[in-house]
Length: 320
Image (cartoon, rainbow, N blue to C red; front, side, top):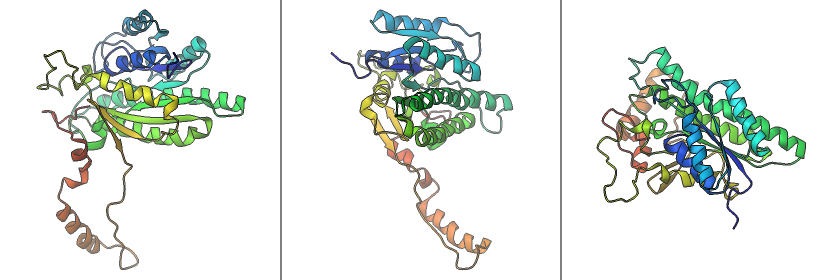
């Protein structure tokens, strides 16, 4: 029986735990050969000594289930290590077809308390890591497409967050990185379309090591049922976006959790004002904009939070 991803190869970064592990297992279940990447540092803030063991354990789990997988222990925010990861996929499977960018860390702090290092480290792992991997994967696909004289198969699934959509008071570095990832995704989708490559981003909500504080009070079911916040709810969407069935889906942002997928529209103009003179004056802007925002209410700007049914954690963090 043919599987949706038979004959395809995939990289999943940050795949030793949580979302990345669930995504890697799902892609393997659908037939893909996996390169399981994880730096293996124990701290969710990126601290501690790196280890090859966590990535290798997931690769072994895939092999034990009858799938194909190799492990890669390396920091994807390092430009050379990202190149090595793509090279490993090509050396192992002959080509790369699917890239799932998931690796990340947290260093939460309010904007007035955040250090330069806390800002830089989160931007580096999330946003630069996504760029590094996308860069080398796109070089591979563009080279293959030019050689073949035709589009090739390429899928990118990036990981953004509801922290970007609705703000997250204690995570200015994380929210900024996740917003940047959406911009990277839409740009990549446009640039790579002619080579046969799609690029999409997801905003997952799941109970993982990264969100253990946020979900305090949202305990796992005790009746043996599937946790609504389990990463396994997110993985099927990643499998779909990685598949041939999603050939017509690109440049999209989707929120996913607990059996729900929401397609997020790009920002739209909600109001437009024209000056009655050659140029706006302060007084004219005051007369137009101040009553407009007063009538709408301070929170209506973020109406998407109500549509998506977001709730806040006690620390002001979002649930993703």
